[in-house]
Length: 384
Image 1 (tube, rainbow, N blue to C red):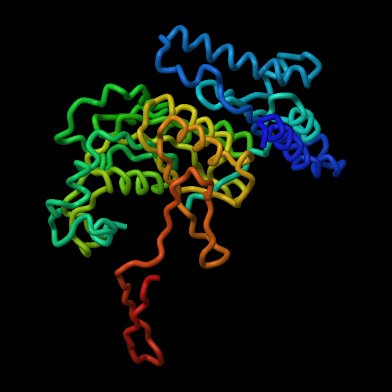
Image 2 (image 1 turned 60 degrees about the horizontal axis):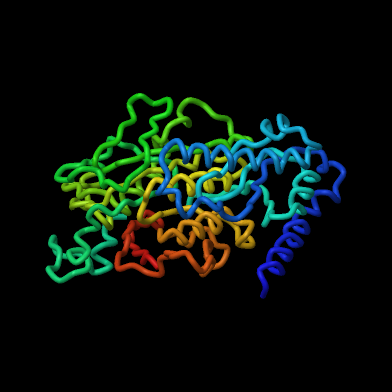
């Protein structure tokens, strides 16, 4: 199919997807947050060759182009456009997120060069024997010819994680025995409003993105303006991917052993995009896209996302769009398949350029005790 035909079809489908908003008079004037996707920047491929001043100029030019596009729909009012846009994606992903009414969103979708316009959708957030189960380790040792040794335990691989952030004081992020931070890392340790947040040679970066969350109705407080994890999910997923070995790990004295991530000698960076639920969702597409744009530029080698939502067309899916741009830059993106059903085999994050990880079975059982008429009977429940 010709490129022009594909783009035209995308315009038609995007406009049709927004049309139902216009059919309701009560919704026509209501303002919601949307993402406007324009593809890629012409400067994206060569960003690494530019100096800081030239890069800033390119990003300012990209943001101005976004303001001009929206101002054209606002009758030339550029200040109104600036007030409406809360994210400009200016590095690798070309687009912006803005507060718009449905009529304006539909009008933008009809503009030349616009691939899609879609609501700032919410996403939902989707233990230590995994590595033995996969054959990477066993009986307290690592096989000499195993995949872990061949990969040098992920040495100096930079793993970026999109989640609820990270608790930097966790023992999983100690930097004992690690050398200097890899020279290709261009990211930042943005502590935000938390002066106690810090990075080291293991946890080499932290950022947070919450403007999309706020636009969707989330109420921000000081604890959200930091990469620090206030939930625990992000610390768990990041340590699972790249946590340092922690000997003597146990729960209430049981299951004592060494807890380790899949790439224990990797470097890790946390991108906080998920916060307390708003209408059942913790993470929003506008923030996820901002994190993708930053992480690609920061120099991560692989990205991990344990979050997802209901299926939607790929050009209206923030994870699909962001991961597409990452993969084009040689960055594999690994996503969870989800665990919310409704069917036993239901999966999300199925764009063909993603690695989608899901569990089918495991080699553990969880015994429990059940009492019937004061008679104790032991029942076993097998994990599936």
